Amino acid sequence: MKAAQYQKYGGPEVIVINDNVAKPTPLKGQLLVEVFAASLNPIDWKVRAGYLKEKAPLKFPITIGGNFSGVIVLLGDGVTKFKIGDEVYGQAIVLNGGSGSLAEFLVSNEDNSAIKPKNASHIEAASLPLVGASAIQALEEHINLQKGQKILIHGGAGGIGSIAIQLAKSKGAYVATTVRGDDIEFVKKLGADEVVDYKKEKFEEKLSGYDGVYDTVGGDTTDRSFKVLKKGGVLVSMLGEPNQDLAKEYGVKVVGQSTQTNSKNLSRLAQLVDSGVIKPQVDKVFPLDQTRQAFEYMETGHPKGKVVISIKE
Ligand SMILES: NC(=O)c1ccc[n+]([C@@H]2O[C@H](COP(=O)([O-])OP(=O)(O)OC[C@H]3O[C@@H](n4cnc5c(N)ncnc54)[C@H](OP(=O)(O)O)[C@@H]3O)[C@@H](O)[C@H]2O)c1
Image (cartoon, rainbow, N blue to C red; front, top):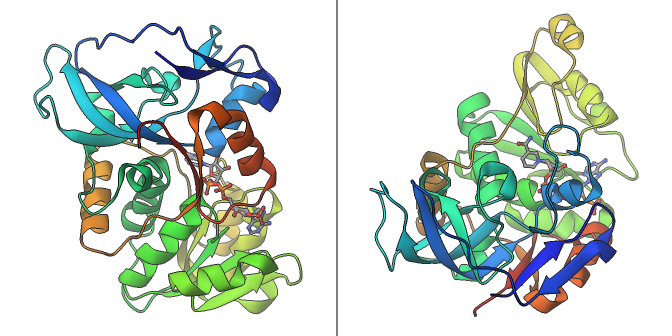
């Protein structure tokens, strides 16, 4: 089968399209899926760049990617929740025991898969698993966002941010977000009530008394976010553990989130898409043969929402 692979650690130049990759075999509790579409996430370039080299060394070549949408063609032993022919989506990154999603076929763990949203195409569904599960976990589990509360979402035009804005608005929250000037109209259309251009303004000088901050940016943005929160507020960061000393000083709760792309979060996500609460945000679609260009676009093109690879559509 055809797959996009990394030959070694490095930049986009280490990506190759390989026509002779063996079709993977589903182990116990896994699904074999014919892939219709896959999406790129920052974790995919971080893996390629060797950021996880020490913690999870790779045996090259490896098939790129995790997020997918497709159709089940074979079940491993012990699979109970699915049948052959089901349209599913999920996370099949090699780090999770999957076989990688930028391929004609993949294996995914049963618990990292769910029935895809019926109202979404495979391209749209493939854009969702990691970013959608992230937004759900942060807003519903950690922040427990309620009607009338105020939330600041950093990086509102990104993969996670563009879903988190929609979810927060659907709960009746007041939503502020930080983006570059080019993205202001995009996030207003998603429902943001207040937009701060992070290139021109300091969000901590404009916003205060917030119940929650959802940080998808990291760096000094995380520490500066404490000033925006009211006592008892919650700061969730996607980029490591926020500073506990500052949390004590400001009287707030902090969470360094590790997203679970499990069936529970994926099924909840599908329900939110099918009920019209969340609309997938696909910026650009590339064919599998142009995976290298797709990564270059994700890494330098400032996409609004997601970059997707079309494999069988
Ligand atoms: N911990 C976990 O389990 C987990 C799970 C998923 C993702 N993540 C991480 O979470 C981060 C966000 O993921 P994503 O998929 O949403 O990435 P993304 O699609 O690249 O979105 C990040 C957004 O932040 C914007 N941005 C950059 N600097 C900013 C700043 N100073 N202020 C406000 N916005 C800024 C970027 O836009 P411009 O650069 O165009 O302005 C981009 O729109 C990534 O680092 C990812 O690896 C962690």
